Length: 110
Length: 113
Image 1 (cartoon, each protein chain N blue to C red):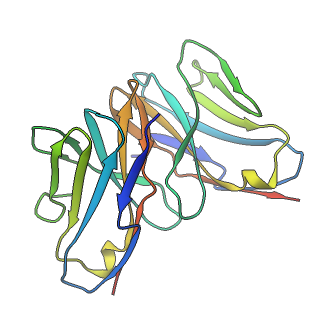
Image 2: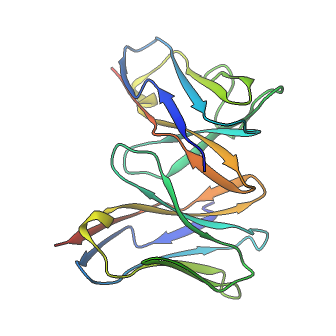
Image 3: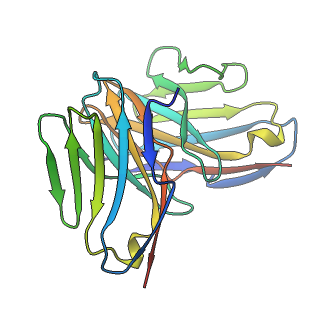
């Protein structure tokens, strides 16, 4: 059973546009929701994370929106750049149990 | 954050052989994890390695196939034993710091012929 459902599987965005990736979960015990960015041939790198006591967190061009009642969270990349082309994974955690989404391959077209 | 290195970065191995992957962290950590990531797929947790105790394996992974050592708070190894082509994958170690946050190494890309 997939603990964290991620969509879309792939995404193509024009340079300057907004990229939006969505994740949903069922386990209300999750209390930490990170996003990871992975470039080909590299390990996943922590991008931004949120806890359920806030509804939004912003770091530069990256924003997490969190809807506790709907059990959904999303990553928004503003002013998307070709350098943002990578695979993005959402995750949900309770304690040290991490559950990863299936990943979204983002391509930003110049 | 944490700086994590893995050796080797990649290897091509023959069926039936074993490969040991090393993971080194720049600071002491309690929790270390080993993941497998098949091409274009998500991350699958193999086991959790705590210093001073036996590794805890996830469903579908066994110690005989993936023995793990954790001799100290900055180092761990994962061995892929009696390899088959189905073991071809990227193997990643990660560490937990600052409660809940996991940081990943660069990965080891394994190809089994």
